[in-house]
Image (cartoon, rainbow, N blue to C red; front, side, top):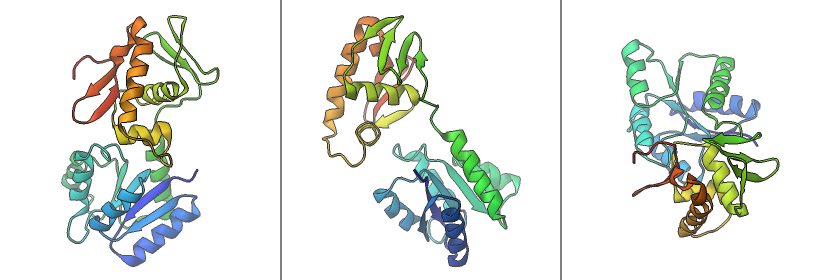
Length: 231
């Protein structure tokens, strides 16, 4: 499936040029002329990466990056800053705001596409094609089995998908809405509280082996899968 790239650039000629290059490279570009339009787009579609111009009218790109990093639903989105401001203090400001990479203006299309591909590879969840193991808990996607120290653990299909997603994204916090999108799919209507029911079932299945403590509640936010005991 083509990766979706949100392109936030106020100069129409540059925006159209980048949009065409992204489409030609096999991406699905979503153009936006400013921060307000970008936020409206993200309410409808979650991009895989954001190309963000620093010098936007109104809310600057650097301020939008800070907003995205403060929001639990967008804090993990990869961001590449497009800017002519490439001096060290500017780079430091961008890194402190949570930007993943810089592309200095003027730039070549080939460099831009290469940077996008590199950031997507770097920020992608670890591969789930082979068995995943955490402290003796093993999930094998190919055989659809979960074991603890060699002992089979019986989990339902939804709990299996949830555990697979958690193990592939350990230590990250997810809201109920994000879990619904990633475990059930974003085209399926399910009440958010249904997530709590399946979390309880998953914990119950893992409890005899002591792994239920890995499925942690983050109060006011959602859930995470972590080997750390601190909240």
